[in-house]
Image 1 (cartoon, rainbow, N blue to C red):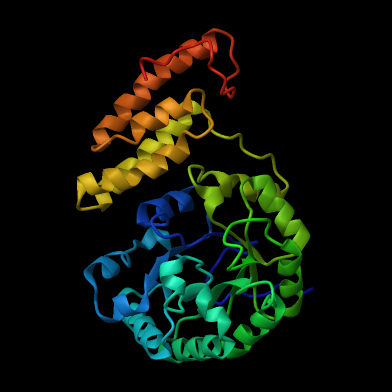
Image 2 (image 1 turned 30 degrees about the vertical axis):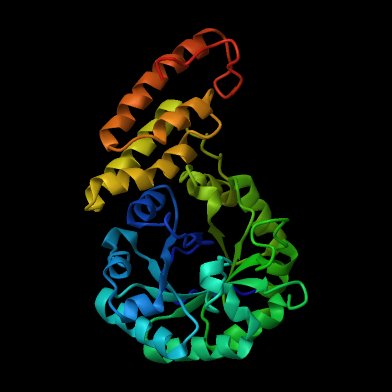
Length: 349
């Protein structure tokens, strides 16, 4: 089968995307994931109405640096005219590499306004939105969606074909319905069927928690690219590991505690230099800290301390204290990745 062409510049290989994730795929994390092997990144999903009305909080999330390219801006909404206006503004003011439309978000506050996956209840509206956005911008218009609203309306190939016919240039499928939310398993067979049916590139998404998962999805589905979302939480190196498995080269080892902390601190410094509100940024960063230390020995106690930080300077001190405990833990013969610390205390951490 001939290789499908992406409508913007990507390396000549299966591209790995960082998925758009509210409150997570902000500029510092996008840059960090690029450093660790992500080929393409996408902004958090942003309200078309917020963009059109020049809402300060929404507009601030559109900022990105040149090192983040190729980058797409993802917008959501249920009014074709508002979506078109937002796409035109994004194009004129920020000039990303593509505009992505969110037809997949399952969150109630979005769906109850028929945004995100709520649009899947009316595929005529979906087509109108894609056509309106495509007319409003010279940039490629791409889409991210789910397999349907519910089991009765589950028709990923039919949905994909209608979106392609309406003007979508890349199609990303999270192979669950909206009513499934994140429960059950993503149906990778559906990604395979969509990849076979469409002329445009298809991205597989859903249940990629490790690099091994990513490789299995690619082999199973024959997708043209992969979109990694929650699997990147606290492990941006998943992209580099996935690339190695795809290329058939030795997979880099998962970073040990010292390297993991160094990456987390680098991320923290990037956030600190990017955000204006230092305290607010530190509070928001707590979730990232929790993800970085997941699975470490005595991680519950460590997370409890990290979830209390109000200043980035506290993080380095907590990490330093934890490393004292960790070195003792390893010296007593415990395995470095063994979370059972029933015979040790972590007072220093």
